Structures are given as structure tokens and as C-alpha cells.
Image (cartoon, rainbow over all chains, first blue to last red; front, side, top):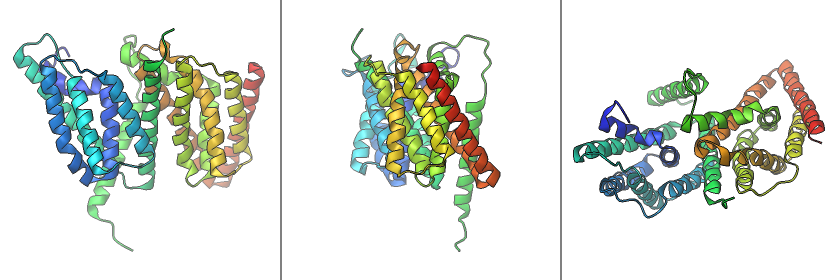
Length: 175
Length: 206
């Protein structure tokens, strides 16, 4: 991102890559629906897996899986769970957190930068991703009134709808 | 009666401010000095797609109105069910699977849903959800066929799902008028207008 430096560009990176922001927002809603205990449970694997993913991305290794498609699939599943207000058990949330973070990290690589700039960009990206999840989960956790819980479920259904349409396009036969 | 915890009050106030800010951001118009491209272009074209089609607008507002007329859990169940089933219809459109008489289905949705609001019909919730779900497939298919041509398909789909949801919200907010006697008449009149518009759409589609 021109003009703001590698570190700040890294912070903004999860906000400008739609599959990343979508899965982070909806996973945050899922965590928030489950409560503070789930956030404590899922955050450590998330933070560590993100670091591992970014470390791998730093060596310009591409993920073996189509990361954006898998992230959209995860966003669709998380959206369904939010819409149904059925957060999974905490160990499963922790696994999901690790998987999402690893994929986002591996999909956030930068090319053509010096080592110092690459480190700054990836460190910024780590901070940006962690903050987005924290804010999303925090807002969802604060929603205690009936209409606020309903709004979360509606948001979950919107994310599922958006993600599933793009997944259909990804798997549509070539014409 | 228990006194409210001060922390809870502050949290609720902050959340209200946050939601108000989000709504204002959504309502703000951008400065169109440049042509929207990429993600912005995809989002804008997706967002305006349901809004520029009067048949979609009529049916979406009717879903919100009917949900509120039904009351109870219907007020949130219908707006949750609709996008999920609409995505299924959209997927059919994206995959190129044809659906017969899409335009007729959309027109009938406005006619039927408007009539339900007009007569304040209160069938069992599962019947209402089924009816809305069937109509959602037609609306989704119409949007889905546009998706492969979108500048950014994900931004397009987020845009049109968001616009659809906001149209439902408009219907729900209008239905708040039904707290008053005159408001109830206005809501039913809204249903009549939507049903009439649906009849016109149907005649045009046939």
C-alpha cells in the first residue's frame, strides 16, 4: 500500500482482502456468541498459528490449498453456526481458530521487498488480524439484548449467503 | 426489581453509539470523483442490483412487513431464512442451472406477500418460512445469473445480500407504525400497494 509504509500497510491488509475480513468478522461473532471463556480458549492458538502462517509466508511459500476458497468455506460454516446460534464446543473452536489463522497467515505473503520491509509488513499484518478478531468478538460478546442477538444471527446468515454464492462460482463448470 | 449494573449501562450505551456510527457509515454517500472499480465497483453494482429492480424492492419490503405482522420469532426468522435460501437460488444461477419463469416467480412473490400483509394473514410459522423460502429461490437466481460478470464476485454478492437485508429492515421499521391504529391501516395499505405492483409485474412478465 503506497505512502503509508510497510508496517501500516500490513495492519490494513486484512481489511482490504475480502475473504480475510469476512472470515475474521464471522469467526469473531461466533466466539462472541459463545462468550469470554471461548475467547480465552481460542485466542492463544489463533495468535500462534497466525504467527506460524506469516512465518511460512515470509519465505514466499504458497499454501498447497486454494486458501481464499477454503477461507470462504470456513466463513460459510461459521456464518451458519452464528445464524443458528449454535457455537461449537470450545476445543473445536480452538482448532477452527488455529486453522483460520494459519490459512490467513500463509495467504498474506508479500513479494519483492527487502527482509526488513517484509518483517515490518508481516508484523503489521499480524497486529491487524489480531485486532480485527478482537474487535469483532468483543462487539458480539457485548450484545446481550434480544434484538442485538437477532442482529448477530442475521449477520451470520448474510455472510453464509455471500460466501456460498462465490463458492458456487468457484466450483461452477467452465462455459 | 434489580438495579441495573453501571458497567452494563455503559456497555449498552457504547454499543448503541457503535451501531449508530455503523449505520451512518452505511448511509454516507461517497464522493464520486472517480469511477468505482475492483472491490468498490463490485460492491456498488451488487448493492444497487436489488434496489434498482422495483419487483425486488417490493418483495423484500413485504418480507420485512410480513415478518413484523406475524410477530414473535417470525420477525427475525424470515430475514434469516431469506438470504440463506436466496443463496441456494443464486448458486443455481451461477452454475447456469436454468429455473423456469424467474420473472413470473418474482412478480408472484410481490403479489402474494403483499396480499399477506394486506389481510394480516397469520399462517403457522413453518408455512410462512416455506413460502418466503420458495420465493427467495427466484430472487436469488436472478441475482446469481449476474454474478459471473461482476467485477469482483465476492464484493458483488456482499453488496446485494446487504441491500436485500436492509430492504427487509425497511419493511420491519415501517411495520413499527402498526402500534397506532392509523399506522396499522398504513401498513395494510402498504401491503395493498405491493400486491398491486406485483399484479402489474405479473402482467408485464406474462
